Amino acid sequence: MSKAPPPKPTDSELEILHVLWQHGPATVRVINDHLSQRRQAEVGYTTTLKILQLMLEKGLVRRDDADRSHVYRAAVREQETQGLLLDKFVDAAFGGSALKLVMQALGSRQTSADELAQIRRLLNDIEIQNSTANSDDDEHA
Image (cartoon, rainbow, N blue to C red):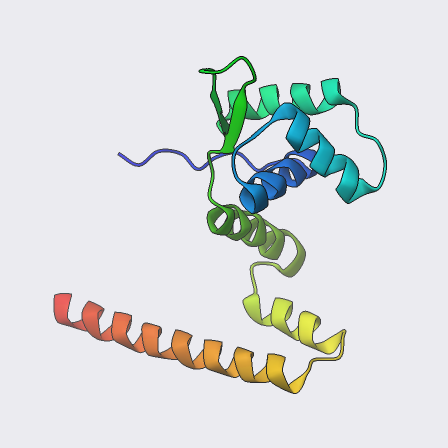
């Protein structure tokens, strides 16, 4: 039985997760300081604490109570969270079409030659993975 995916984080929760993914486990004070730097404005300590408490209840973070200062760490992985958010975004904004997403992304801004080369490599890798997966499916049919 697989466990349910974690809930979609709010914008504020995602901002805290970014701090934890980039800097690792941290106290509320350290997280709050990073948020204040990112926003270039003072963030209330109690606001950060409350959001972390809500995130703990949702299963987005874990808390180490061993020391006097509680240390929080991300309980969800960055790549999985990005995938979840992207899937929901593609479904909502592009009707589930990856092609529409890519066309919009590439058509709305200047893409460098290096970025295009990376995209080509990624597409080639995906094509290889798909052909390998399809041949595995054929063998099990």
